[in-house]
Length: 252
View (spheres, rainbow, N blue to C red):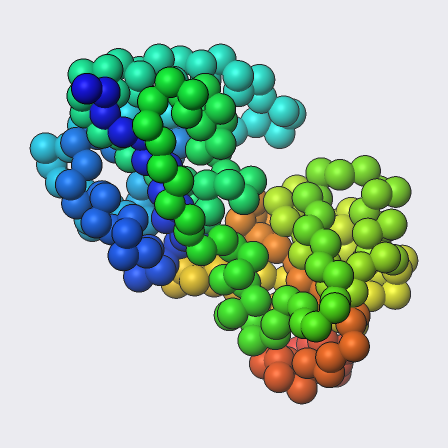
């Protein structure tokens, strides 16, 4: 019999945010696969490294990190072949995915190649979006608020329309687009409602007012949360989004 393919969400970075089910599957898995950059370590693997065993076979799916869009089809085609060989041998394969597998997760590309041939189970994980709201201390949305998720690489016009129409906006994949996002949010008059977060749940996590984020690129794992709905959640924040006086005093 063929093995089972598991796509597990490993969360935003804190190993303690791994679900019990994901932890159980990791403990018994014979084969572990995960995305990895062509330089440096796999972030997904680092989150769960303390739970892995030396005897587990590992398959690193190397996806080169490039500014331009990398043609990843061939990468996932090859990874699917390697994983299929393990499944055909009767071994279960657990694929690690940062955050949640089906929320902009890399596992979905393996799922579309393998799920029609093999038994497959997707184990949800805590996404960076949910974790960001938690560490910020401000709910994403409530009642009938419209929450819109905006990938930063989108066109300016589409982002501006989203900022205008939605009650709450989460801008993900900020990275090198940070200055453009600041400009668009400023033009929309929402700077005093925008919070910036990077590397949430990690030891080097940062939470700032967007107005305090200036020149330079942001990490890929960064997000901007904006709320302009009916609820008054400003008082619950660890800082005043609209108050620049402290920062001005520091510069003087």
